Image (cartoon, rainbow, N blue to C red; front, side):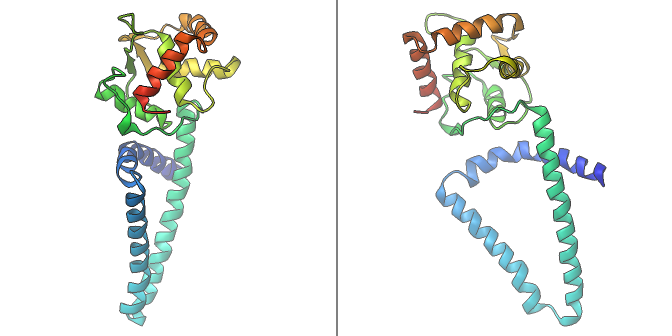
Length: 224
């Protein structure tokens, strides 16, 4: 049973990666789509309850009861598999709480992300493992190559409570997230420069230049 639950957990996790974008963009798109989905669920449950009682003969009802028991057992298995999914996600990620973004409003072209990198950024923000590393190429306005400052600013804006207070283990986990999830101008992130770059970024985040970077990234992300 444990092997079955773990297997289903992995399957559900893979399916979730594929379907989550559809759910976010279609079902949770606005209040109308949410209400329509809830009405569909209520209608489906009503049909499942009413049809057996009204149209099934007495001699056949025990089979339907057994069927409901079987469905209930299967649901219990999937609930257990769901918690297995949560364990998989917890082990795969770093425990950061990301803000909810309207992905359709993000200017990925201005962020200089191709379609693959944009998809992987969405997965990361949804606390899912990116399929491939995200190639960060956004430069400062007066430069041609990306650097860590804008990447830090990006995460400062999309992680709850920002990252400017990170020290110790939290900072180490954040660096590990960057190293495992990003490329910088097509090259692997240099772990040796993260510490000094982060310290420099923290010292200047509230400067005029730092505030300009924040406004720039906010405009790209379409957030206030």
